[in-house]
Length: 500
Image 1 (spheres, rainbow, N blue to C red):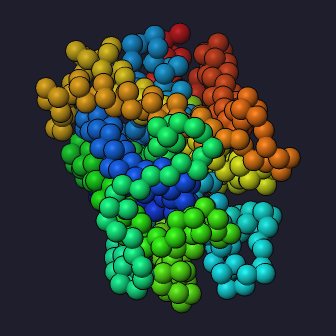
Image 2: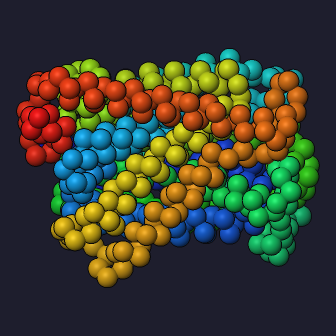
């Protein structure tokens, strides 16, 4: 096992986490138009506020646990301290793999979204140009490789890169807001922005359509456990890592709300710009009509830069997750994935293993363009399940034995944890529901029963990975295998195998 001192650079956790989540707050650019068609401006504005409030509650629950166990690996290490001894291996295994799956598939989602956006900006300048799926996937591969190179550089550059991304986001967001509001003519009224509702999902229930519109906000406000994965690289981790989680959510919530409020004030013709536009994502059409071609190019460059930083931040967090998991012998090829490069001080094999997996998952986009929604669903469902397990254990079996850290919720802990568990289960259920009816594919329209086939790619991939991980765990336990790494109290898997 590589010791905690193998990382020479000490980086402030709140800085990392906040920057990562601000990056993620631009995720709504991919799904903003879908949310507008699921509930109009109400789904965007009030949906964002609702999701932000509940997500901050989830963050409070995780921050309390993080303060008690500020160790790299985060969620699955917490579970090893909270679960009953006989359930530790299984619970840690499921938590760790779900956490990894959510972080790594998020790379695919972010980089594919960037590839789509780059194709759209080319289409603005040349309406006859049509970047096909294969070209978009090729762009995606180039972006993913660049992210791998960046995160293979010396660890000292991570802080510099994230600092630059923070300034990019803040300055870029402010520029878009000011210019868009100043130049866009025929702005809608405040009443329209805060009260307009439209259901273009095909479902007869307006309530269900609004709930579907919440998905874009929930997808955006995820991945905020990054601070936990960087705990061993921080000063005073028991205090700084929990603050990092909360700063991340709070900053992203405020930044995203102000941005989307501004964009909604720039919508001039809902039917033409949102429902019937040929540009994707629809936000591009709103910018083009409002501020003209030149400023639209500037805006899209800003957003594409934000998306690029997001993918890089996700690569950083996921590589630390894989490193910690492999360090404890919980992955295939653990000996390689747990290696810290002597020169760069980064888990270089873990970085490229995640990049390779993200590229393989991206092939789904070639097979079927609707698979992009499945990729988003896998990302959010897996991450949510990884959040749910430690919070649920803290609320139930570890309720009396849990030893608080410097940051805790006091008498409000139980109610906050209960609401967090409810919200995670509720949104996870939404993510496996079809988002439109009937589902339109290359073969035409499908009936309601066939519409649910939209969720199959998501479920198949998720369960295949979890099942293969569980099989490996059973294999290790049955052979009582002595792993190469050093046994320690931070390694729930080796301790359990030793006990057998």
